[in-house]
Image (cartoon, rainbow, N blue to C red):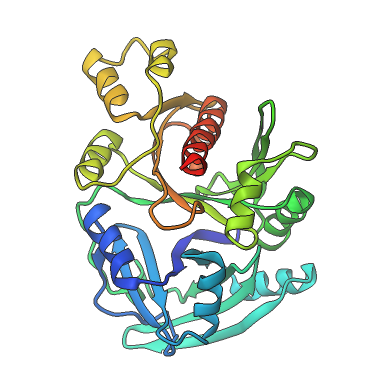
Length: 349
Ligand SMILES: [Fe+2]
């Protein structure tokens, strides 16, 4: 397996202080004191983190810069999903063999505590994957110079990527051939007028998961097609942060004003929660509008944010895995329906 973890996610944004405020004051992120792995000198860049989640925010004052042009077309969007990898040369060799554009070849970055190897390859839409390989004596991400904190969000569980129907197989092959990931889950949601296909590629050992979602061929419209059109191309639809206490995390985040997609009471009336769940725990799930589901390995609890910026594109998810390794089919459908309902409210305005 070539990917060991999500190293960082970089957003291109128009108003950096505002997005930073959202992540810090709404979601509990902190500023990092220094950035060694980010080399951009043309842009304003800020690194924020929470436990093992690193977010880079970049903006540009120059309206003619590439960053500004891309933000003017897509709105704030996820530009880079950076992976820590075990063998960067092997990944680059696989990417070349697959015909992927190498944006930056392997090079070394020096900083006061050691060396990392870095390279960047193109991926879906305007997005790219930076690849980071730490040399063996560097442990625990010192290039990010951070302290672990007590905030509830722990790591990036998965990203979901909206892709064109015709490209779905191509992107599955991209992650299989370049990174050695395997298809671990598949689910289709079909409604009367729309639909979504989803395929998850990942690795059990490292807990890496990439969810590829596409519109369904032949349906008149789909929220995935709307995403692709609003995003000016294929892109990251949501980022999921894991926590070991979703009740505490969501209470905290909701108290700070971040809004999440609503779920109707009927969902909870019909929900088949385990007998072992105390009534107070059931009530908390219902009050916070947290979704419950299972896969063959265990349970998972999930909640999805409303959009946090001006375009109906990316959003965030928080989830707690209680043994589940993949996804629950009920929650995939529920998310699709909730987003559909939220979008129809926005279009009605
Ligand atoms: Fe998700």
